[in-house]
Image (cartoon, rainbow, N blue to C red; front, side, top):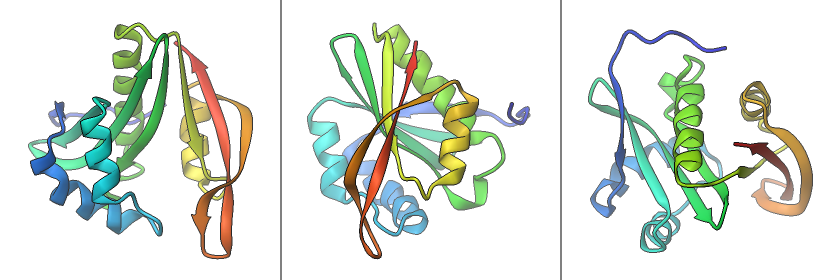
Length: 153
């Protein structure tokens, strides 16, 4: 499934003071990144926003919205130098555990069809494609659809 880690990792709550470091990663890995406003809105709305640290260094983050008995993964990102080392899998597992502990029975997410690595990650963890949102994401040539995935928790 994923690499075995010998290093220390931890999830910490994200705060507005963390946004410059989060945005540095976000802007480096996405052609159409979330804005500071997107993160601020998520924090203000009370969404679960985490920093993912490995040996004390910020290498990723996640944003999860909880409503009733469902969860919606809004953002899960790992800094480029740390991708393809199992960190995404570990962070996804921790987010799903947190959603389950908060009473969610189902988790949803959207992923770009052009994000093959993301789709592989989600399918490896048991997510199934359940729908499509047309023209959901901005793209170089206009808009890109979003594939909707879900996982019973």
